[in-house]
Length: 253
Ligand code: PGA
Image (tube, rainbow, N blue to C red):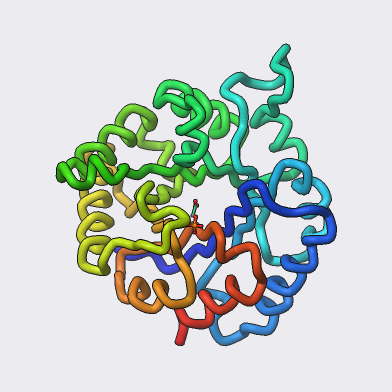
């Protein structure tokens, strides 16, 4: 159930100013030179809202895709001060969007709100990077699969949606901590999740599942042997072109 193309997605969170484009420029140059492997992977960077237009215009002829980090759960326009809709992002030329990151869930985003975001983002033809993950307490109680299944079932209502949804499994205890699941543990979770989704939604293809949480050039060396893993959502290490490129280099070493 492995897909051919691997994803390396950088989530910049609240980082970056216009001058930070130099990071993308270096990553783009690396991609163009990496003739041996670059047909096998896709790079997506999610800068903050303030940089979306600037970066996507600069990258028009490049191979890196730009993603938004979030959107509001109502469509088009409305009286929602400080918010941006999926429609507005789409009109900017954005193709991808992260939805349901544990950091946005932590500020009060419920499964119902995430469901609305996913529905509206799909309606606007955005491709979704849908984050799920358990916290340490749930992991200790061995509730990981139960939590992940419920996060998926409560949000994704339609089997067709999976054509445009990439799942990012991000255990909360692993984000920014330097602690990662063991390769065995991760392999099992990815396998079980794929099996669950395929059966529940009666899919005739394998949904893409990425891993996120303290991914760096070291941890990627172990994870690359997990056949069913379709790539990585990378936070801290995506803010430096060197660290991000080293992850890709080590993956293909
Ligand atoms: P991290 O973040 O790589 O810094 O752990 C990952 C994420 O939050 O997407």
